[in-house]
Image 1 (cartoon, rainbow, N blue to C red):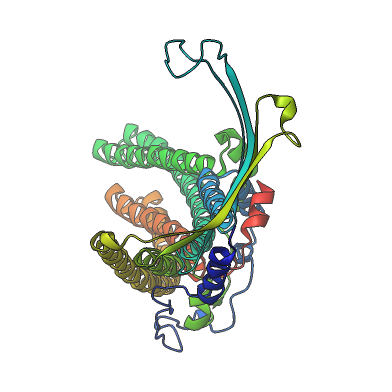
Image 2: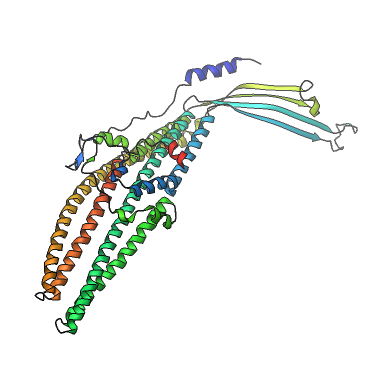
Length: 476
């Protein structure tokens, strides 16, 4: 058997093995300002600290977040997608190595007896074969390495997607807990006012029987109490919604959520300053931007996969085996067969289809780049809006608390005059409605302030940028 075909094939492989066709991927250039536009007096430029949610100082929140990271179904789905992509990446690695098949066959043949060229005494024939066949595609132009490169980049993208889900789940747990605490605070406030208005109704009813108040006063007080009762029912529904949302996020019965939440703790005390870092640091932390960039890089590798179809493919083939008339003869007494040599295939007449596939891959890469830039812009928009939202929530909370305090004092003075008989029920109703409205708005503003800070922490993505998917998988 001449050796020059294999030598020629190996020489070609050595010469062209490092040649990978297709465009070289270069990360798009990004211009960012040195400081966030909405980083005002509430923000510090120090680096974002780890475990941001612990800044709330809420043990119930720590318990719920730990539970969510262990059992949340969205995280489980994202982790499963990552595991699938990793398995595909492992599969692509094997395509770079030789394939070896083994085989064993048995065959029995018998003439029909009507063949004029065979003697009648010719009997049956048994044939047994055993052997090995190997093939190895030498990746001359990246037809195998480019798919491997693409799937590896998609693994990185899915890991970033897992981190993004992690951030979203933590933020939603925090916001749902704050909504739950806010509903409890509103219920307590309304219950206190319902008790107070019941006493006022009893007083006005007694005065009306003695002719000191009119039936109109009694009806007005009764209407106010009924309105508060309706608000109380609405807040009970809001409380149930928040509990159910936490049950979904933590994948446990709502009774377990109630056991884990200290309803008397109230809303958390918020830090006076929030470390936001710089836009350059922020960009490295955002997993959604990192995911989009890795998918763009994978799209470029896909172009190389299609371009490689313009070029020939070299495969090394080899085989060795035995043939015998009985199983016992397989080995030394069997006849041997062997073959080896290169095989070159080249779809020269298929260049039209290849060109269309290359153009389709290029279009997908252009779309991936547009998506990357859109993701970056939306992430920046989310972060700037979160900073502005937290700043405005701080101002609103301060102003509404001052308004509620003033309304409480005004209502106290009107009630004193009402009980002394110098004010009618309408004046009292107006003052009390104003007080209750401002107190409820003050509670709402504290809830909005806490949820706005959770949204800002989510936008900053500080404590999750270094999340190791392996560590997350180990906790599940």
